[in-house]
Length: 91
Length: 306
Image (cartoon, chains in turn green, yellow):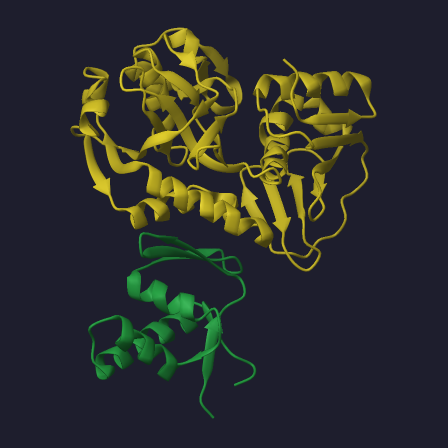
């Protein structure tokens, strides 16, 4: 079964000119994100697989699927470590 | 002037003292907010939520019960704001009332900060000022050691309008910009800041080794509201003063950093963040090192961000 991810419910986003700040109300930590990170987190308001995220990056940015896959994998791993994402219970 | 914040209290002398305090803050949020104060020594209810600590004050908020509870650590005092409520229920012990000045400036001001959030006013640790020549609003955000008060006092000596040296409340203005309301309180300078500004006088505030000055004492005026065009994030340095422009994202990160309460009360976090985002877009921001040259050339700060 393909894992699907979504934003932690205690996450709040503040976009500013394509980038932004992410605030986790539970851990009381905040992070800045670049335009790619903001794009991914906005998509992750709904459950997404890694493939969904890779496809979105390939469509929006001038990157190959391999490059996008590496970026998405790294971003999702980092977000999971910081509890910014959860694995969707319906996956 | 009568505060727009309502007050009920079962102790007449205490009620008069608290009404005076509220009036002195000059805060005029939208109608409907209130403090309901009673005198008792009753212990506060148990609460297992993760505490959020500030000097002398403990706050618990969020799930499962929602709302916010505030404890004072100096003497027994407790306040509760139920989810969605616009009236804070406050219990003060006789011991807390004996320390009423400290109680209002510490515990009750924290309660007020949470109450004001219910009206869309969100606190940021910042000083505010208006440049009398350019007409631009300034917000100077940072912690207690950043130099906010010294900067506010310096600007007041140059005839600027100063709103506050720490208690600033962001709110959405009618024009889509963020406006910042100031809590009326004297600028509190440490002994070193007072000496660098070559000031004499001031009212000693024994409990924190500071001297207080009203903006008017220093040649300035009071600014109840400021719409920031310039944001400074200062720190104190030994060399010459410098300023580095910040991008919007870094500005927002800094604003979040100095808005400690943004992480509390989940239902109010997003509107608070949205205001910070609007502010990051509306103003130019700088990370500033405040050097001693400022005290010989006080207009240098304005030149650095011109």
